[in-house]
Length: 147
Image (cartoon, rainbow, N blue to C red):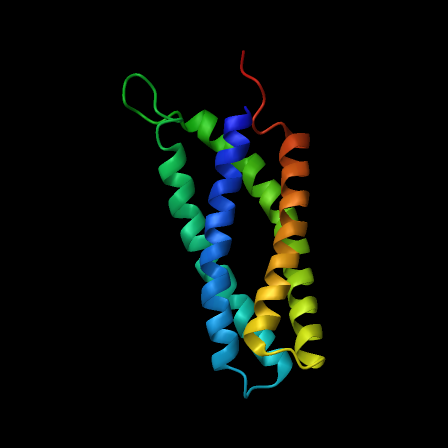
């Protein structure tokens, strides 16, 4: 059970690390744009990179978990777990998006360098995201002890 939480968080952190780098570059490239445009495009890029990396890592980490001895996929278990994961991530993502956008916009309005505003807002929002996501995953018992 603890190993499942660690694997999930490892995948999330790796995906966020990738998106932090790309988002900071995009924020700096858009430094001549209005703060709300910079923030919006940077947040969109963040999501594209984050979900691309996360989905790939999640698949690689869990591809054997949903295999039956016959070699077929345990679709019932997969659907059940995906519903819980999507629900947990969906709630956490709403909170993350609002926090990330607000923090980056605020940092830009007080004259942070765009790349620094992006990095700072993403780090703060990621911490909030992880707290919310792990709380919800625990409440929904996504990784309940199967003994």
